[in-house]
Length: 154
Image 1 (tube, rainbow, N blue to C red):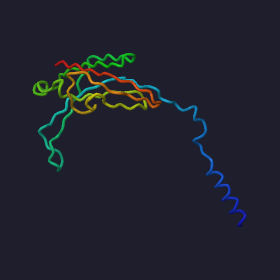
Image 2 (cartoon, rainbow, N blue to C red; image 1 turned 30 degrees about the horizontal axis):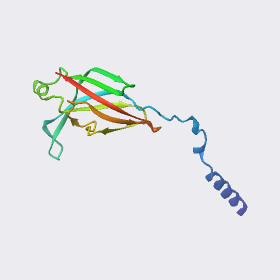
Image 3 (cartoon, one colour; image 1 turned 60 degrees about the vertical axis):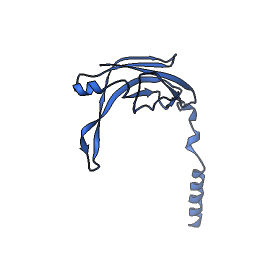
Image 4 (tube, rainbow, N blue to C red; image 1 turned 120 degrees about the vertical axis):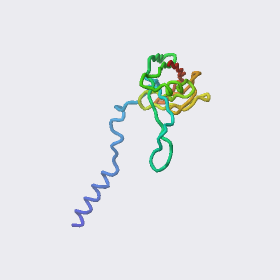
């Protein structure tokens, strides 16, 4: 019985010293893309209703209609044009302006994006009256500095 336990223990130890991570690594994708593929914008405002027991005012977010998108991967520019949709109330239409919209973009798989030169973070209300620069870093280490410009029509 001791010999059987010894062989089982040796077998388990031999298996624990091997690694499946060393096989077929050359077949994994390296994800070298550092591009912007699409852009979106929203208008965010405080509603009149309070939410839950916190007493905080409800934040309402409505998507703006994209009417133009010019993405140039060579020049690393992304020009987005949006308009206020017809489902906005007159008050909402009056309050929406280029200085308080939320912009977001899709980027290449496995890449990350960061603002540069004082650009606002994406996904928060910001002033888009001027173009902003962002660096997109691919998983393989390549990077590209993009300029995003936004135009808003009502």
